[in-house]
Length: 132
Image (cartoon, rainbow, N blue to C red; front, side, top):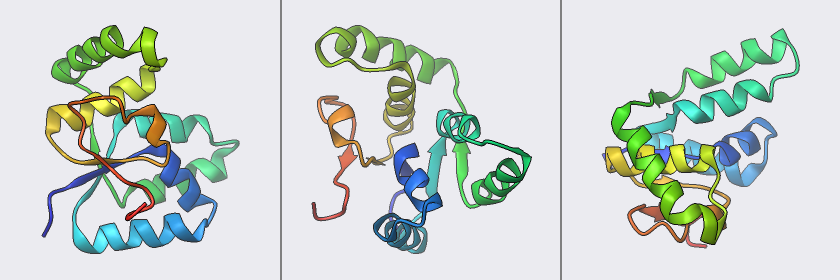
């Protein structure tokens, strides 16, 4: 089995919206490796819930993934990323924390929003869609 992969929030939002490309991608990844998400992704998805029914549905969906919690190493790396990339590239806190999670754990990361992450040299950013 391949190295675990960290999937960004935007792809999971598309899965929730039944975007075929995202659904197929996630199903393929789940067959090939362990799919992980950042605790920040969980928070972003929770904030998007409009009612208790959606939150319950989200809780069930999240059971598919291993959640990587924030820790002092991830926090320190996110601060470093913001110092390096905030002014020149507009890096945001949530993206810095998610990227830092992938860097600290040493796992490849995939996001629909390639432009938010492509300048981070330490990050192993995979193309999305694959082959794209």
